[in-house]
Image (cartoon, rainbow, N blue to C red; front, side, top):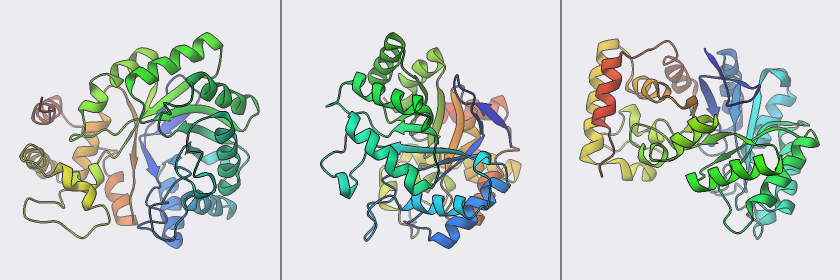
Length: 320
């Protein structure tokens, strides 16, 4: 496992990061504990979660993923210093359903709740989950800056920001001498290129932000288990419908050709392409069992040739 500086920070993050949206959705707590322990044993040090995971599941009011991670940490399976805990604020939590933004009151309440659930006294990377058009960016950044000064948060980042808002946040923080965002979480994969590459990639490279690419396997589409006449049983099957296009089937075909050459899985080739992109610091994977985790880990020793990267780049270029 390789480690990379996350933006202009002191955090060294592993090539693969463990996403935890599936905990409390498609993974129960005993298997959550197994996946967490196996991931850290394999060298993964960044665990990414959010306060809302996974509120969309019947009987799940959100916070479940954080609670289960907290239980795992409390069990002393690993020391707190071994892991970089990343979580996110903003979402329709039941106890604050009318306060889903990034105003000062909401951020402070959300951070305290996450600290309790995670059973820790600090969060390594605290992220704004989505931008909030109703709250001035100055108020959001001031609140996050205060959390850093209080020692409850080490670094701050954001997710799902458009380029204009990210640039505004960078310059506002510089002008006010607040803590700055060190990272961005964008959706990024061979079938999701335009929304990151059009503007966000240049901003991240220019200002030295780390990039934590989420959904690098496009909800499982880039594993090869979906075919034109085959839809496997999956809790994410409905979310994959947008990827079932002729353009994307051709991407899968090229991935399969390269995978056969290396005797690797299609998923490993897809992950290797995303990791090779210039702005990317780490890939957030979401295995639902140890088999999927081990397959994803197989990507770490894989380096595609310049010709293979170019071929994948060419065939996956977004359609205007």
